[in-house]
Amino acid sequence: MKKIGSIVAFETKRMLLSKTTAIYAGLYLINFIISAIFFKLYGSEYTVLTVGNAQSFPVWHLQASFLYTGIFLAIYVAQIIVQERSRGTIKLLLLRPVSRPTYYISRVVSIFLFSVLLTLMMIVLSYVVGLLFFGWGEQMIWGSLTSSGIQGVLLTLLCGLAFAFSYFAFGMVAMLVSMFTSKLLESAIIMGVLLMAGQYFELLSSIKQFAVFHQMLFFHINIFEKPFAYNVTSILVLTAYCVVCGIIGYLAFRKKDLYV
Amino acid sequence: MSENKKLPVLELKDVTKQIKKKVIVNHLNLSLQQGDIYGFLGPNGAGKTTTLRMIARLVFPTSGEIFIHGCSVSREYRKVMSYIGCIIENPVFYLNMTARQNLKLSAKLSDKQIDPSRIDEVLDIVHLEDVKDDKVKTFSLGMKQRLGFANALLCHPSIIILDEPTNGVDPMGLVEIKELIKQLSEQENITFLISSHMLREMQDLCNRVAIIQNGSLIETGAADDLLKKYAVDNLEELFFACVKEARR
Image 1 (cartoon, rainbow over the protein chains, first blue to last red):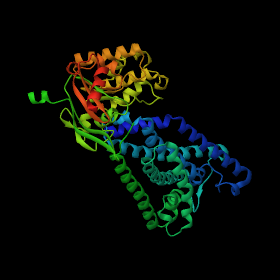
Image 2: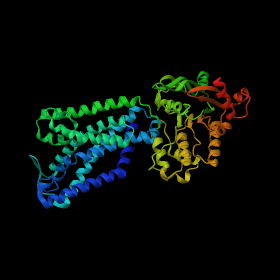
Image 3: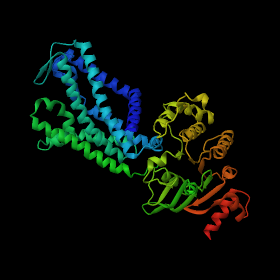
Image 4: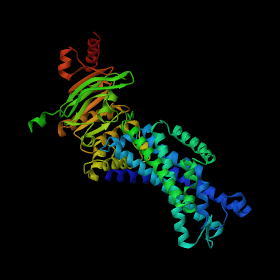
Protein backbone atom coordinates (compact mmCIF):
# COMPACT_ATOMS: atom_id res chain seq x y z
CA MET A 1 0.00 0.00 0.00
CA LYS A 2 2.84 2.35 0.93
CA LYS A 3 4.46 1.82 -2.45
CA ILE A 4 1.19 2.38 -4.29
CA GLY A 5 0.92 5.65 -2.35
CA SER A 6 4.49 6.66 -3.26
CA ILE A 7 4.01 5.91 -6.96
CA VAL A 8 0.61 7.64 -7.09
CA ALA A 9 1.95 10.69 -5.21
CA PHE A 10 4.85 10.90 -7.64
CA GLU A 11 2.59 10.49 -10.65
CA THR A 12 0.09 13.07 -9.37
CA LYS A 13 2.82 15.62 -8.74
CA ARG A 14 4.22 15.01 -12.21
CA MET A 15 0.75 15.35 -13.72
CA LEU A 16 0.02 18.60 -11.88
CA LEU A 17 3.33 20.15 -12.90
CA SER A 18 3.29 18.95 -16.49
CA LYS A 19 3.01 21.28 -19.45
CA THR A 20 0.30 19.03 -20.91
CA THR A 21 -2.00 19.72 -17.93
CA ALA A 22 -1.39 23.44 -18.36
CA ILE A 23 -2.27 23.13 -22.06
CA TYR A 24 -5.51 21.28 -21.21
CA ALA A 25 -6.40 24.03 -18.72
CA GLY A 26 -5.72 26.63 -21.43
CA LEU A 27 -7.93 24.80 -23.95
CA TYR A 28 -10.80 24.52 -21.46
CA LEU A 29 -10.43 28.19 -20.64
CA ILE A 30 -10.53 29.21 -24.31
CA ASN A 31 -13.57 27.01 -24.87
CA PHE A 32 -15.44 28.48 -21.89
CA ILE A 33 -14.57 32.05 -22.89
CA ILE A 34 -15.82 31.45 -26.45
CA SER A 35 -19.03 29.96 -25.04
CA ALA A 36 -19.51 32.95 -22.73
CA ILE A 37 -18.87 35.45 -25.55
CA PHE A 38 -21.35 33.69 -27.84
CA PHE A 39 -23.97 33.68 -25.09
CA LYS A 40 -23.41 37.40 -24.55
CA LEU A 41 -23.72 38.08 -28.27
CA TYR A 42 -26.45 35.67 -29.38
CA GLY A 43 -28.10 34.29 -26.25
CA SER A 44 -28.65 30.56 -25.76
CA GLU A 45 -29.21 29.79 -29.44
CA TYR A 46 -25.53 29.32 -30.32
CA THR A 47 -24.14 27.88 -27.05
CA VAL A 48 -24.81 25.04 -24.64
CA LEU A 49 -25.79 27.62 -22.02
CA THR A 50 -29.42 28.40 -21.30
CA VAL A 51 -28.76 30.63 -18.29
CA GLY A 52 -26.09 33.30 -18.08
CA ASN A 53 -24.67 33.06 -14.58
CA ALA A 54 -21.61 31.55 -12.89
CA GLN A 55 -23.68 29.17 -10.74
CA SER A 56 -25.07 27.39 -13.79
CA PHE A 57 -22.01 27.75 -16.02
CA PRO A 58 -20.03 24.59 -15.00
CA VAL A 59 -22.79 21.98 -15.22
CA TRP A 60 -23.80 23.06 -18.70
CA HIS A 61 -20.25 22.71 -19.96
CA LEU A 62 -19.46 19.22 -18.68
CA GLN A 63 -21.38 17.41 -21.39
CA ALA A 64 -20.19 19.83 -24.06
CA SER A 65 -16.57 18.82 -23.43
CA PHE A 66 -17.23 15.12 -24.12
CA LEU A 67 -14.87 14.71 -27.07
CA TYR A 68 -11.79 16.55 -25.90
CA THR A 69 -12.03 15.46 -22.25
CA GLY A 70 -12.17 11.89 -23.56
CA ILE A 71 -9.14 12.54 -25.77
CA PHE A 72 -7.19 14.21 -22.91
CA LEU A 73 -7.87 11.18 -20.76
CA ALA A 74 -6.88 8.75 -23.52
CA ILE A 75 -3.60 10.65 -24.02
CA TYR A 76 -2.88 10.64 -20.28
CA VAL A 77 -3.49 6.89 -20.06
CA ALA A 78 -1.25 6.31 -23.07
CA GLN A 79 1.43 8.50 -21.45
CA ILE A 80 1.51 6.57 -18.19
CA ILE A 81 1.19 3.13 -19.78
CA VAL A 82 2.50 3.10 -23.36
CA GLN A 83 5.05 5.90 -23.09
CA GLU A 84 6.48 4.45 -19.87
CA ARG A 85 7.15 1.27 -21.81
CA SER A 86 8.41 2.90 -25.02
CA ARG A 87 10.75 5.27 -23.16
CA GLY A 88 11.78 2.55 -20.74
CA THR A 89 11.02 4.56 -17.58
CA ILE A 90 8.88 1.64 -16.38
CA LYS A 91 12.27 0.07 -15.53
CA LEU A 92 12.95 2.72 -12.93
CA LEU A 93 9.99 1.36 -10.97
CA LEU A 94 10.05 -2.34 -11.81
CA LEU A 95 13.76 -2.74 -11.13
CA ARG A 96 12.97 -1.90 -7.52
CA PRO A 97 10.96 -4.21 -5.27
CA VAL A 98 7.73 -3.08 -6.89
CA SER A 99 5.55 -5.97 -7.97
CA ARG A 100 3.51 -5.84 -11.15
CA PRO A 101 0.18 -5.79 -9.24
CA THR A 102 1.47 -2.80 -7.22
CA TYR A 103 2.52 -1.00 -10.38
CA TYR A 104 -0.80 -1.80 -12.09
CA ILE A 105 -2.96 -0.66 -9.17
CA SER A 106 -0.98 2.58 -8.91
CA ARG A 107 -1.79 3.23 -12.59
CA VAL A 108 -5.49 2.58 -12.04
CA VAL A 109 -5.52 5.01 -9.08
CA SER A 110 -3.66 7.60 -11.17
CA ILE A 111 -6.26 7.34 -13.94
CA PHE A 112 -9.04 7.86 -11.39
CA LEU A 113 -7.25 10.89 -9.95
CA PHE A 114 -6.71 12.34 -13.40
CA SER A 115 -10.44 11.95 -14.20
CA VAL A 116 -11.27 13.81 -10.99
CA LEU A 117 -8.61 16.46 -11.65
CA LEU A 118 -9.88 17.15 -15.18
CA THR A 119 -13.43 17.50 -13.86
CA LEU A 120 -12.39 19.78 -11.01
CA MET A 121 -10.31 21.82 -13.41
CA MET A 122 -13.33 22.28 -15.68
CA ILE A 123 -15.60 23.21 -12.80
CA VAL A 124 -13.19 25.74 -11.27
CA LEU A 125 -12.30 27.33 -14.63
CA SER A 126 -15.93 27.57 -15.68
CA TYR A 127 -16.87 29.18 -12.36
CA VAL A 128 -14.10 31.73 -12.96
CA VAL A 129 -15.20 32.46 -16.55
CA GLY A 130 -18.85 32.54 -15.49
CA LEU A 131 -18.07 35.02 -12.72
CA LEU A 132 -16.04 37.25 -15.01
CA PHE A 133 -18.68 37.37 -17.73
CA PHE A 134 -21.98 37.14 -15.86
CA GLY A 135 -21.44 37.39 -12.11
CA TRP A 136 -22.61 34.72 -9.65
CA GLY A 137 -26.35 35.07 -10.40
CA GLU A 138 -29.34 34.27 -8.28
CA GLN A 139 -30.04 30.64 -9.08
CA MET A 140 -28.37 27.60 -10.47
CA ILE A 141 -30.72 26.38 -13.16
CA TRP A 142 -29.95 23.12 -14.87
CA GLY A 143 -32.63 21.19 -16.70
CA SER A 144 -35.45 20.66 -14.25
CA LEU A 145 -33.17 21.43 -11.30
CA THR A 146 -33.12 24.74 -9.50
CA SER A 147 -30.83 25.52 -6.64
CA SER A 148 -28.69 28.28 -5.22
CA GLY A 149 -25.75 29.15 -2.95
CA ILE A 150 -23.72 26.39 -1.36
CA GLN A 151 -26.36 23.82 -2.26
CA GLY A 152 -25.89 24.67 -5.92
CA VAL A 153 -22.13 24.28 -5.60
CA LEU A 154 -22.54 20.89 -3.90
CA LEU A 155 -24.93 19.82 -6.63
CA THR A 156 -22.38 20.86 -9.23
CA LEU A 157 -19.67 18.87 -7.42
CA LEU A 158 -21.91 15.81 -7.23
CA CYS A 159 -22.59 16.16 -10.90
CA GLY A 160 -18.83 16.46 -11.46
CA LEU A 161 -18.18 13.29 -9.45
CA ALA A 162 -20.66 11.38 -11.61
CA PHE A 163 -18.99 12.85 -14.70
CA ALA A 164 -15.53 11.82 -13.41
CA PHE A 165 -16.74 8.28 -12.69
CA SER A 166 -17.98 7.76 -16.24
CA TYR A 167 -14.68 9.12 -17.61
CA PHE A 168 -12.74 6.85 -15.26
CA ALA A 169 -14.60 3.88 -16.80
CA PHE A 170 -13.56 5.18 -20.23
CA GLY A 171 -10.00 5.56 -18.87
CA MET A 172 -10.04 1.88 -17.95
CA VAL A 173 -11.01 1.03 -21.54
CA ALA A 174 -8.08 3.19 -22.67
CA MET A 175 -5.83 1.35 -20.22
CA LEU A 176 -6.85 -1.99 -21.70
CA VAL A 177 -6.14 -0.71 -25.22
CA SER A 178 -2.76 0.62 -24.00
CA MET A 179 -1.75 -2.87 -22.92
CA PHE A 180 -1.84 -3.98 -26.53
CA THR A 181 -0.35 -0.96 -28.27
CA SER A 182 3.25 0.10 -28.47
CA LYS A 183 3.00 3.79 -29.37
CA LEU A 184 1.29 6.70 -27.63
CA LEU A 185 -0.15 8.00 -30.89
CA GLU A 186 -1.51 4.59 -31.85
CA SER A 187 -3.31 4.30 -28.52
CA ALA A 188 -4.66 7.88 -28.63
CA ILE A 189 -5.93 7.46 -32.22
CA ILE A 190 -7.75 4.21 -31.38
CA MET A 191 -9.44 5.87 -28.41
CA GLY A 192 -10.26 9.00 -30.43
CA VAL A 193 -11.90 6.90 -33.17
CA LEU A 194 -13.81 4.91 -30.53
CA LEU A 195 -15.01 8.18 -28.99
CA MET A 196 -16.29 9.53 -32.29
CA ALA A 197 -17.84 6.24 -33.37
CA GLY A 198 -19.23 5.62 -29.88
CA GLN A 199 -21.57 8.58 -30.17
CA TYR A 200 -23.57 6.61 -32.74
CA PHE A 201 -24.68 4.24 -29.96
CA GLU A 202 -27.20 6.98 -29.25
CA LEU A 203 -29.11 5.76 -32.31
CA LEU A 204 -29.54 2.32 -30.74
CA SER A 205 -31.97 3.15 -28.00
CA SER A 206 -32.31 -0.38 -26.64
CA ILE A 207 -28.61 -0.84 -25.91
CA LYS A 208 -27.24 2.67 -25.61
CA GLN A 209 -27.36 2.57 -21.81
CA PHE A 210 -24.72 -0.17 -21.94
CA ALA A 211 -22.26 1.92 -23.94
CA VAL A 212 -19.64 3.82 -21.94
CA PHE A 213 -19.94 6.68 -24.44
CA HIS A 214 -23.61 7.16 -23.55
CA GLN A 215 -22.70 7.24 -19.88
CA MET A 216 -19.95 9.80 -20.55
CA LEU A 217 -22.53 12.02 -22.20
CA PHE A 218 -25.48 11.53 -19.89
CA PHE A 219 -24.66 9.81 -16.58
CA HIS A 220 -24.05 13.09 -14.72
CA ILE A 221 -27.38 14.39 -16.01
CA ASN A 222 -29.36 11.19 -15.62
CA ILE A 223 -28.56 10.81 -11.91
CA PHE A 224 -30.78 13.86 -11.38
CA GLU A 225 -33.35 13.20 -14.08
CA LYS A 226 -33.92 9.45 -14.39
CA PRO A 227 -35.56 6.97 -11.98
CA PHE A 228 -33.47 5.24 -9.31
CA ALA A 229 -33.53 1.81 -11.04
CA TYR A 230 -32.22 3.33 -14.27
CA ASN A 231 -29.32 4.94 -12.42
CA VAL A 232 -28.49 1.73 -10.55
CA THR A 233 -28.20 0.01 -13.94
CA SER A 234 -25.94 2.83 -15.17
CA ILE A 235 -23.71 2.53 -12.10
CA LEU A 236 -23.50 -1.24 -12.62
CA VAL A 237 -22.63 -0.72 -16.30
CA LEU A 238 -19.83 1.71 -15.44
CA THR A 239 -18.55 -0.55 -12.64
CA ALA A 240 -18.58 -3.50 -15.04
CA TYR A 241 -16.44 -1.52 -17.51
CA CYS A 242 -13.95 -0.70 -14.74
CA VAL A 243 -13.78 -4.25 -13.37
CA VAL A 244 -13.74 -6.14 -16.69
CA CYS A 245 -11.21 -3.84 -18.37
CA GLY A 246 -9.16 -3.75 -15.16
CA ILE A 247 -9.00 -7.53 -14.89
CA ILE A 248 -8.28 -8.19 -18.59
CA GLY A 249 -5.66 -5.41 -18.59
CA TYR A 250 -4.00 -6.89 -15.52
CA LEU A 251 -3.96 -10.41 -16.98
CA ALA A 252 -2.29 -8.99 -20.10
CA PHE A 253 0.26 -7.00 -18.08
CA ARG A 254 1.02 -9.69 -15.49
CA LYS A 255 2.90 -11.90 -17.94
CA LYS A 256 3.90 -9.30 -20.49
CA ASP A 257 7.53 -9.41 -21.56
CA LEU A 258 8.98 -5.93 -21.28
CA TYR A 259 11.78 -5.46 -23.79
CA VAL A 260 12.83 -2.15 -22.28
CA MET B 1 25.19 -21.34 8.23
CA SER B 2 27.96 -22.86 6.14
CA GLU B 3 25.26 -24.04 3.71
CA ASN B 4 24.17 -20.44 3.27
CA LYS B 5 27.72 -19.26 2.61
CA LYS B 6 28.07 -21.73 -0.24
CA LEU B 7 24.79 -20.71 -1.78
CA PRO B 8 25.44 -18.97 -5.10
CA VAL B 9 24.54 -15.29 -5.19
CA LEU B 10 22.93 -15.81 -8.57
CA GLU B 11 22.02 -19.08 -10.17
CA LEU B 12 20.35 -19.78 -13.50
CA LYS B 13 19.08 -23.32 -13.88
CA ASP B 14 18.30 -24.50 -17.38
CA VAL B 15 16.82 -21.16 -18.39
CA THR B 16 15.27 -20.96 -21.85
CA LYS B 17 13.51 -18.14 -23.62
CA GLN B 18 11.67 -18.88 -26.80
CA ILE B 19 9.59 -16.42 -28.81
CA LYS B 20 7.35 -18.27 -31.23
CA LYS B 21 9.80 -20.69 -32.87
CA LYS B 22 12.92 -18.66 -32.20
CA VAL B 23 15.07 -19.70 -29.27
CA ILE B 24 16.67 -16.58 -27.77
CA VAL B 25 18.27 -18.24 -24.76
CA ASN B 26 18.85 -21.96 -24.80
CA HIS B 27 19.01 -24.02 -21.58
CA LEU B 28 21.37 -21.61 -19.87
CA ASN B 29 23.07 -22.53 -16.60
CA LEU B 30 25.13 -20.01 -14.65
CA SER B 31 26.31 -19.73 -11.08
CA LEU B 32 27.88 -16.64 -9.50
CA GLN B 33 29.60 -16.63 -6.12
CA GLN B 34 29.84 -13.69 -3.73
CA GLY B 35 32.46 -11.18 -4.82
CA ASP B 36 32.73 -12.46 -8.39
CA ILE B 37 33.11 -10.00 -11.22
CA TYR B 38 31.49 -12.08 -13.86
CA GLY B 39 31.87 -11.14 -17.49
CA PHE B 40 28.90 -12.21 -19.56
CA LEU B 41 30.33 -12.04 -23.02
CA GLY B 42 28.99 -12.53 -26.48
CA PRO B 43 28.36 -10.84 -29.80
CA ASN B 44 25.34 -8.61 -30.43
CA GLY B 45 22.16 -10.67 -30.48
CA ALA B 46 23.67 -13.53 -28.50
CA GLY B 47 20.96 -13.35 -25.82
CA LYS B 48 22.88 -11.42 -23.13
CA THR B 49 20.33 -8.65 -22.55
CA THR B 50 17.39 -11.07 -22.68
CA THR B 51 19.10 -13.14 -19.98
CA LEU B 52 19.59 -10.04 -17.82
CA ARG B 53 15.97 -9.05 -18.40
CA MET B 54 14.89 -12.49 -17.22
CA ILE B 55 16.99 -12.11 -14.07
CA ALA B 56 15.27 -8.77 -13.41
CA ARG B 57 11.84 -10.29 -14.22
CA LEU B 58 11.19 -7.85 -17.04
CA VAL B 59 10.97 -10.86 -19.33
CA PHE B 60 9.64 -14.25 -18.29
CA PRO B 61 11.60 -17.42 -19.06
CA THR B 62 9.84 -20.05 -21.15
CA SER B 63 11.35 -22.67 -18.86
CA GLY B 64 13.95 -22.94 -16.13
CA GLU B 65 14.38 -21.14 -12.86
CA ILE B 66 16.49 -18.24 -11.59
CA PHE B 67 17.60 -17.89 -7.98
CA ILE B 68 19.21 -14.99 -6.15
CA HIS B 69 20.60 -15.86 -2.74
CA GLY B 70 18.54 -19.03 -2.97
CA CYS B 71 15.29 -17.11 -3.53
CA SER B 72 13.33 -17.84 -6.67
CA VAL B 73 12.95 -14.77 -8.87
CA SER B 74 9.52 -15.97 -9.99
CA ARG B 75 8.16 -16.61 -6.50
CA GLU B 76 9.97 -14.09 -4.28
CA TYR B 77 10.29 -11.16 -6.63
CA ARG B 78 10.21 -8.40 -4.03
CA LYS B 79 12.83 -10.02 -1.83
CA VAL B 80 15.05 -10.71 -4.83
CA MET B 81 14.81 -7.16 -6.15
CA SER B 82 15.97 -5.78 -2.82
CA TYR B 83 19.25 -7.69 -3.31
CA ILE B 84 20.03 -6.36 -6.75
CA GLY B 85 20.92 -3.14 -8.52
CA CYS B 86 20.62 -3.05 -12.31
CA ILE B 87 21.30 -1.21 -15.49
CA ILE B 88 19.53 -3.13 -18.24
CA GLU B 89 19.96 -2.16 -21.91
CA ASN B 90 20.54 1.51 -21.08
CA PRO B 91 20.01 3.69 -18.02
CA VAL B 92 16.63 5.39 -18.20
CA PHE B 93 15.42 8.25 -16.04
CA TYR B 94 12.66 10.84 -15.99
CA LEU B 95 14.33 13.47 -18.13
CA ASN B 96 12.50 16.46 -16.66
CA MET B 97 13.60 15.57 -13.17
CA THR B 98 17.00 16.20 -11.65
CA ALA B 99 19.50 13.43 -10.94
CA ARG B 100 18.75 13.79 -7.23
CA GLN B 101 14.96 13.65 -7.71
CA ASN B 102 15.27 10.49 -9.80
CA LEU B 103 17.36 8.80 -7.13
CA LYS B 104 14.99 9.99 -4.42
CA LEU B 105 12.10 8.30 -6.20
CA SER B 106 14.17 5.18 -6.62
CA ALA B 107 15.08 5.16 -2.89
CA LYS B 108 11.43 5.58 -1.92
CA LEU B 109 10.54 2.42 -3.78
CA SER B 110 13.13 0.34 -2.00
CA ASP B 111 12.13 -2.05 0.78
CA LYS B 112 15.19 -0.86 2.72
CA GLN B 113 15.30 2.36 4.70
CA ILE B 114 17.54 4.58 2.59
CA ASP B 115 19.01 7.58 4.34
CA PRO B 116 18.74 10.77 2.23
CA SER B 117 22.51 11.26 2.64
CA ARG B 118 22.99 8.01 0.69
CA ILE B 119 21.76 9.79 -2.44
CA ASP B 120 24.54 12.38 -2.17
CA GLU B 121 26.99 9.65 -1.29
CA VAL B 122 26.35 7.61 -4.47
CA LEU B 123 26.30 10.76 -6.59
CA ASP B 124 29.72 11.59 -5.13
CA ILE B 125 30.97 8.09 -5.90
CA VAL B 126 30.13 8.49 -9.60
CA HIS B 127 31.37 12.10 -9.66
CA LEU B 128 28.00 13.66 -10.43
CA GLU B 129 27.91 15.80 -7.27
CA ASP B 130 28.23 19.04 -9.25
CA VAL B 131 25.27 18.29 -11.51
CA LYS B 132 23.00 16.56 -9.01
CA ASP B 133 20.41 19.33 -9.27
CA ASP B 134 20.52 19.48 -13.06
CA LYS B 135 17.74 17.91 -15.09
CA VAL B 136 18.69 14.56 -16.59
CA LYS B 137 17.73 15.79 -20.07
CA THR B 138 20.90 17.90 -20.02
CA PHE B 139 23.12 14.85 -19.35
CA SER B 140 25.33 13.16 -21.91
CA LEU B 141 25.05 9.39 -22.42
CA GLY B 142 28.17 8.89 -20.30
CA MET B 143 26.68 10.92 -17.46
CA LYS B 144 23.47 8.90 -17.68
CA GLN B 145 25.53 5.72 -17.45
CA ARG B 146 27.16 7.05 -14.30
CA LEU B 147 23.79 8.04 -12.89
CA GLY B 148 22.54 4.55 -13.73
CA PHE B 149 25.50 3.19 -11.79
CA ALA B 150 24.62 5.44 -8.84
CA ASN B 151 21.04 4.18 -8.99
CA ALA B 152 22.21 0.58 -9.05
CA LEU B 153 24.40 1.24 -5.99
CA LEU B 154 21.81 3.25 -4.09
CA CYS B 155 20.06 0.55 -2.07
CA HIS B 156 23.17 -1.34 -0.89
CA PRO B 157 22.77 -4.29 -3.27
CA SER B 158 24.74 -7.51 -2.91
CA ILE B 159 24.73 -8.03 -6.66
CA ILE B 160 24.91 -5.46 -9.42
CA ILE B 161 23.90 -6.30 -12.98
CA LEU B 162 25.34 -4.07 -15.66
CA ASP B 163 24.40 -4.34 -19.31
CA GLU B 164 27.06 -2.80 -21.56
CA PRO B 165 28.01 -0.28 -18.83
CA THR B 166 30.71 1.34 -20.89
CA ASN B 167 28.42 2.46 -23.75
CA GLY B 168 28.96 6.15 -24.36
CA VAL B 169 31.49 6.52 -21.55
CA ASP B 170 34.66 8.45 -22.39
CA PRO B 171 38.10 6.81 -21.82
CA MET B 172 38.58 8.62 -18.49
CA GLY B 173 35.12 7.59 -17.33
CA LEU B 174 35.83 4.05 -18.42
CA VAL B 175 38.89 3.82 -16.20
CA GLU B 176 36.90 5.29 -13.30
CA ILE B 177 34.05 2.80 -13.71
CA LYS B 178 36.47 -0.11 -13.87
CA GLU B 179 38.25 1.08 -10.74
CA LEU B 180 34.95 1.54 -8.98
CA ILE B 181 33.77 -1.96 -9.85
CA LYS B 182 37.01 -3.46 -8.57
CA GLN B 183 36.89 -1.38 -5.41
CA LEU B 184 33.27 -2.31 -4.64
CA SER B 185 33.96 -5.95 -5.29
CA GLU B 186 37.02 -5.99 -3.02
CA GLN B 187 35.83 -3.71 -0.22
CA GLU B 188 32.11 -4.44 -0.07
CA ASN B 189 32.16 -7.92 -1.56
CA ILE B 190 29.54 -6.92 -4.12
CA THR B 191 29.06 -9.40 -6.94
CA PHE B 192 28.97 -8.02 -10.47
CA LEU B 193 27.43 -9.55 -13.56
CA ILE B 194 28.57 -7.46 -16.50
CA SER B 195 27.43 -8.12 -20.03
CA SER B 196 29.56 -6.80 -22.83
CA HIS B 197 30.71 -7.41 -26.34
CA MET B 198 33.72 -5.15 -25.70
CA LEU B 199 36.10 -7.93 -24.81
CA ARG B 200 39.21 -5.79 -24.33
CA GLU B 201 37.45 -3.67 -21.74
CA MET B 202 36.49 -6.74 -19.75
CA GLN B 203 39.99 -8.21 -19.84
CA ASP B 204 41.42 -6.69 -16.68
CA LEU B 205 38.11 -6.53 -14.85
CA CYS B 206 36.50 -9.96 -14.69
CA ASN B 207 37.72 -12.89 -12.63
CA ARG B 208 35.15 -15.22 -14.18
CA VAL B 209 33.55 -15.24 -17.60
CA ALA B 210 30.71 -16.88 -19.46
CA ILE B 211 30.67 -16.83 -23.24
CA ILE B 212 27.33 -17.06 -24.97
CA GLN B 213 26.53 -17.36 -28.63
CA ASN B 214 23.14 -17.79 -30.31
CA GLY B 215 21.58 -18.14 -26.89
CA SER B 216 23.75 -21.05 -25.79
CA LEU B 217 26.54 -21.04 -23.27
CA ILE B 218 29.70 -22.17 -25.01
CA GLU B 219 32.21 -21.73 -22.19
CA THR B 220 32.35 -20.61 -18.59
CA GLY B 221 34.89 -20.58 -15.82
CA ALA B 222 37.65 -18.58 -14.14
CA ALA B 223 39.13 -16.19 -16.69
CA ASP B 224 42.74 -17.23 -15.94
CA ASP B 225 41.92 -20.92 -16.20
CA LEU B 226 40.21 -20.46 -19.53
CA LEU B 227 43.12 -18.45 -20.92
CA LYS B 228 45.42 -21.32 -19.95
CA LYS B 229 43.04 -23.96 -21.24
CA TYR B 230 42.84 -22.41 -24.69
CA ALA B 231 46.47 -21.24 -24.62
CA VAL B 232 45.57 -17.66 -25.44
CA ASP B 233 46.64 -14.27 -24.04
CA ASN B 234 43.45 -12.30 -23.83
CA LEU B 235 39.65 -12.47 -23.78
CA GLU B 236 39.33 -11.58 -27.42
CA GLU B 237 41.44 -14.54 -28.46
CA LEU B 238 39.64 -16.69 -25.91
CA PHE B 239 36.29 -15.70 -27.36
CA PHE B 240 37.29 -16.63 -30.91
CA ALA B 241 38.88 -19.87 -29.73
CA CYS B 242 35.69 -20.80 -27.88
CA VAL B 243 33.49 -19.96 -30.86
CA LYS B 244 35.73 -22.04 -33.11
CA GLU B 245 35.60 -24.93 -30.65
CA ALA B 246 31.81 -24.67 -30.39
CA ARG B 247 31.43 -24.86 -34.17
CA ARG B 248 33.30 -28.17 -34.36
